[in-house]
Image (cartoon, rainbow, N blue to C red):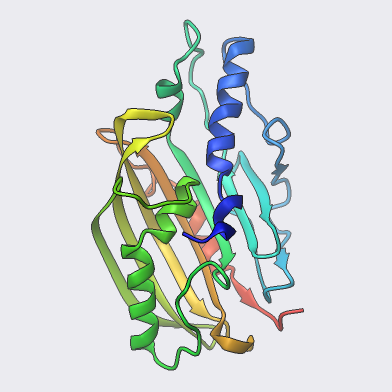
Length: 245
């Protein structure tokens, strides 16, 4: 994995922040400000990634925070809703077991060694399939810099499509994760749902734009992707292209 992914550690920062908050009091209270991110307050205000030539609306729901990822794009994550406080100081494993929901809008330029100049839908499918099997999406979602042996692809599905005149593929994937740094004894599932990778229609060198939703949850828990469709599907469909600046 290239060093460009060093910025993709916000999930680890999120976990540490929750632990620190837990040390203060119970029940745990969190805010976007405490996690050094921006709260999403205007669901109709587009986030413009001018350098890469695209913009998106935020996920259409409550408790979403936003963090810019240098000039490459940005990520949204949903604050957990605690139904009740912990009776005592929670362990790192208890905190890590909380579900994490993320919406990503990101240029993949410079993050992979895969060449540009993609000429066909078949070539784009091949590129995205390689990124899935090499766990680039999983690493970004989970905030790590090395696939190592701990990710295992369980299933994936890739379909060619077009979106606003751009050549795209839509994909989903389920990945199993072992040896999480905060909870090495747990097994997690990474559920990449409603994801899309498009070749920017006007950018040079076939720049790839990734937009999608993912969740991480402990094995044995139920995924929440179906319940959150009304929040992340409008986000994915809100992608708009413009000339890169």
